Amino acid sequence: MIKKIRSILSTLFIVFLFYSVNSQNKSDAGSIVYFTSDISSAGVVKIFDYLKENIHGNVAIKVHFGEEGNTNFLKADLIKELTLKLNATLVETNVLYVSKRRYTDSHIELAKAHGFDFAPIDIMDAEGDKEISAKGCKHYKNVKVGSHIDNYDSFIIFSHFKGHGSAGFGGAIKNISMGFASVAGKMALHASAVPSTKDNKCTRCGICVKECPAGAISIEPLAIDTAKCIGCGKCIGECKFGAITVPWGSTAQGVFLERLVEYAKTIVEYKSNMIYINVLANISKDCDCSRRASKPFLDDIGILASTDIVALEKASHDLVDKAHQCGDAFLKENSVSGKNQIYYAHQLGMGDTTYVIVNIDDIIKD
Image 1 (cartoon, helix red, strand yellow):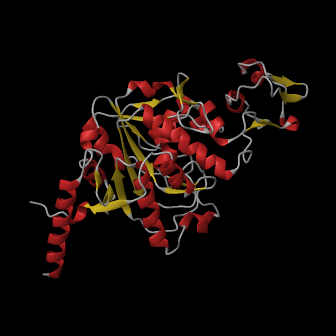
Image 2 (cartoon, one colour; image 1 turned 30 degrees about the vertical axis):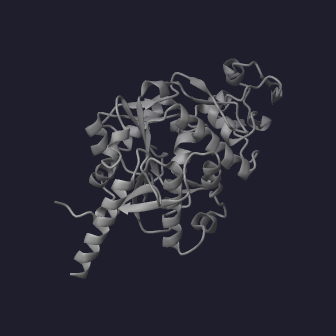
Image 3 (tube, rainbow, N blue to C red; image 1 turned 45 degrees about the vertical axis):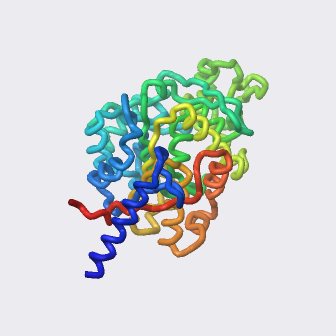
């Protein structure tokens, strides 16, 4: 009886919120963040239905196909039902470092091997990138994204909320910024504009010299002319011997977080028809780009969704912190806090840090 009364009260509260919500899914108490503990394809469809009015036309679902060897990434079946329902395309971009996900053909091959074989796959920077003007940003005047971004009317940002060694955590903000950025864009996000070189690993094959669009590389000895380098990162992918690499750590952690947010802000403003879904499962301290990611340190929590990216990230982090019984779970697990992603995004006007969680599991079915 008590359980039934609680359920009725919860439903009445949700109805009240629905009547007070405006077109941006906000209430007087804060932005609405929907929640379900049902981590399944049915749960994904169920939570999407609360935000579906924001999605129309040619739909893309931004996912992460998982690095080779990684076992924590969100499995394909979780998004399959919604993808087929919307006749959507699964989209990604190539990564900066050398792996199967660095090259379009092997990236798609790996995605299919990981079960993403039920819908079209578009590597958005397969045919190059485009620049989008960045407004109100201190680190960028423009950002570089996959050129196929213009092929879609709406985006569902389907993110695995978990840790990240440099960003503290990876959620919707990182899934947009790093996930839409071209290889050159990722270079601009991660590090200084000039790759690192290791002359002792160079075989003098000359491929990097031939492929460099700026004529910035010489190989006797191996060196990159900083005045000529345009930071495209092409040479990193071309070198199979580890002689040219990403200059990891050349950007301060605080600056990196701000760069992530500014890229996301610019992309969201360019493509305003977006909804955000975070899945709080397989919560490891490591990114899905890691081949040897650590095992999850928490039990699965659920799925959250919102049209407010800041509220969604804040609610997701709060739930993880509560489950881990600490003030910053990712700071505790990998010694890096990513919370400035949330605060800086709020500062730039991307959303609110105040929110109301609506548990859709509590809604009484007719």
